[in-house]
Length: 373
Image (cartoon, rainbow, N blue to C red; front, side):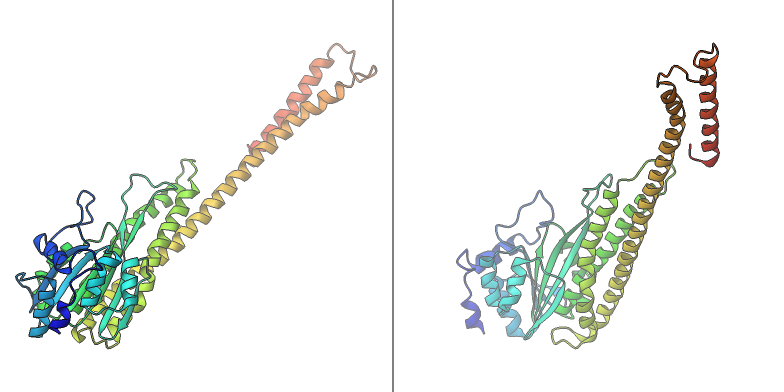
């Protein structure tokens, strides 16, 4: 075993694996979600060894850490990566004997949430979500930003591969280290903590999205007379669809983790996955309710637009009818015949104007009573 591990000395020809591990040990915590900070010069964010749930002092590099864990038969290594390239991940994949298909998914990203087993290694994909703050919701506002976390779980290792500018696992690592009893249950405890963290973010985002939906609903049914831009409603539906793509496919993987016996998952951890699955169900129900509510809001808005258009058409029709009276009378008397009625009468002009005025006033009052004006 040790001889095979020593053979892994390069990352696809770009730097040595030991050099990358030394960089990770020298600067153990880098929050890549912060735009003002830059990566380590490699994709490695952190590399830590745990025994009995306690973080051990760093001795040697990644290869030495893996050798020590496998030689003693206790503890595990947690390696954190951020958007590694094929060449950077090649040596790590060989060191931990990762399946090529899983490696390809971890590097390329843009995967649906899923759970796959390759011999004794478990590969999980989880979609992370983040609510994008905005002062005012518009037809082009970004509401939900998504990323991905891939997790390789083995008997003595956990490898997390993060894609995106959010979803840093630094705070989660510190929280786990404060509970050695839970962390002592092995790599599956880390997988549970990550899944629980991701699902809790789903609930946080859905609560924030609900505030946007409530604001749109208030604007639609407000009595100010101002019309709501339907693009805002469609934008919320698009962002809700993005959230739905992250949440809904995760149901089956969590169900498998909670109910099916899996070699890489400690039986005591399965009960915890059931709790995560319950939280996910709540998020799914909220998203489904939001989708129905947005459909109702959109239909109500379209109905309001239709009613407003009908009111406008009635007003236009009423005024057209009123204007038709003088138009008709003036059109008749504009034919220039010599023997028109009352054409040469001294009071004929006044009489015609009076008739026109009375007729127009009568129509106006009639339309006002019926609500057309």
